[in-house]
Image (cartoon, rainbow, N blue to C red):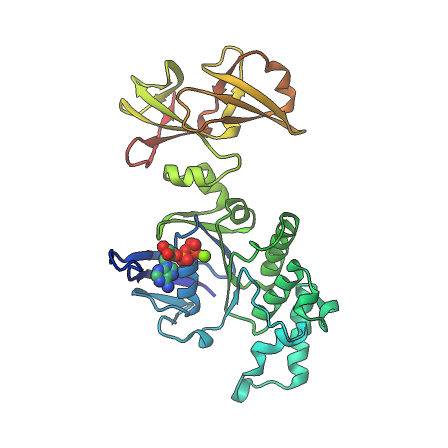
Length: 367
Ligand code: ADP
Ligand code: MG
C-alpha cells in the first residue's frame, strides 16, 4: 500500500503560558512512500518524528493537509479503521496476559463478518509468531521474556491483523547494543517477507541507514532531504544533513575560495571551478583523506588508532570546527604516519562545500 502525505502539518499550542508561540511539529510534509518499502524517518529528538507517526496512525488529527493510503483518503478515519499496526519503544504488552493472548488481543474485538473463532485466532497468532520466531514462548508472560523477545511479541501483535501499514516508533531504543543489531536485521527480514509498507522512526542515523530503502531526514518539523541512504550520505543538501549522517562524522573546516582554489588556512587544498570567491564551510568525510608526504593539507598528529582493516588518524587543525579530525586510512598506509605533522591530499568527491550563512550545499567541479 503506498502512502501519500499532502501538505501534512501539525501545530501544537505553546505549552508555556507566557510565550504562546505555537510549535510546528510537522511542517507541510509532501511525499509519497512507495508500496512495500521500508522508510526510515530520521532526525534528532524533538524534531517531530513521533508526531508524524501519530498522524499516520490516526492518534492525532492534522492541523492541515491530507493522508492517503493507496487511493483512500484516511485523514478523518479513526485509528481503529485505518488498518495500521503500531510498535513502540516500550513494547506496551499486557503483563497479565500470555504471549499468545497478547498476540490474539487485537483479533478479539473483530465484529460481524470479520469475527474469528478461537481456533482461527490461534492459527493466525502462531503464523505471525513463527514469522518473528517466538513460537516456543507462547505460554509465557511478558515478565519471563528478554527485551528482544518482548519486542518480537509486540511486532507479532502489530502484524496479526495483517495491517496495511506498519509503523514503528524507535522500536530498538530499549535494547542493548547487540540485540539492537540483531533485532534490526530481523525487522528487515520480516518486512521483506511480508512486504508491508513500513515506516521506521529513529534518531540513530546508522540504524536508519542500515535497514531503510529510503530515508527522510527531518529537523525542527521540516523535511531536509529524502533519498536512498547512500545517496543522501554522498550528496547531502545542507550542512545539517551532512553532519547528521556518518560515523565517524564528517570533519568540518572553516575555509575560503579564492581565484579557483579552495583554502583551509594558508594552504590551497583543491582546485575548483564555478565557485565565486567566498568564505564557506568545508566538509571532508573521514574516508576522503589520503596520506601523502607532500599533501596540501597539514594537520597536527594526535594519535593513530588501529582497527584491523583500517586505521583512524586523529589530528587537529586551527581551522577545524571539530576538536578532532578523524580520517580513515587503509591499514597498509599506516607506516607513513609519524612525527608531529601529518599531510593529506583530499578526494574531491568526499569534499562537500556549504554556504557560510545559509549552510546550503555549494556544488563545484574540479579541474
Ligand atoms: P520526536 O518524536 O522527533 O522526538 P515529537 O514528535 O515527540 O518529536 O515532538 C515534536 C515537537 O512537538 C516537540 O517540540 C514537542 O515538544 C512538541 N509536542 C509533541 N507533542 C506535543 C503535545 N501533545 N503538545 C504540545 N507539544 C507537543
Ligand atoms: Mg519520538
